[in-house]
Amino acid sequence: MTLLNALVPGFARPARASAPAADTEVRVKPLYGVREDGHGYDVTVHLPGVAKDGLEITAQENQVTITGRRAWTPPADWTALYRETPRANFGLTLEHEGDVDADKITAELKDGVLRLTLPKAEAVKPRKIAIS
Image (tube, rainbow, N blue to C red; front, side, top):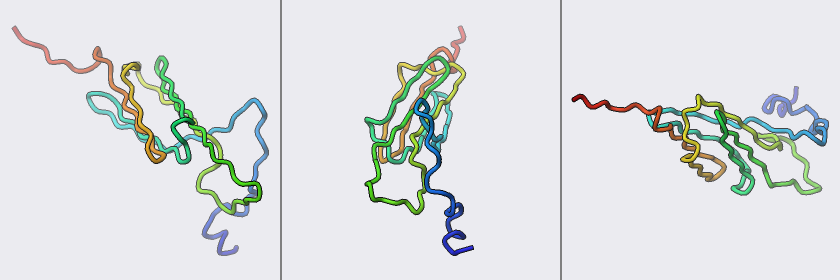
């Protein structure tokens, strides 16, 4: 085993896998985290190489779907020795219990990190009941 193979596991693998069929797109699930509080959910998604115009977020029924497309293409004479992340685009679908107010979802993309705020609908938030 060479030193490079010891430092970078899987280095000896072929650089290119077989190409996917024309009708399918290879997507990788990005690294993400979800935090819940009484007001809603805060979601952080790491999307390295994705610009604002390559990002699509849709909310329907009990799902929020995030699709991130990378715009960078390698130069013709460029050969990768090792990559931290695959060249594939990102895809993530998060399911919730239907308690999110889809009209009030906000998103911010900065330096490849997407921050989503999914507020809970008023009907499911805890309320204080007045005693008469």
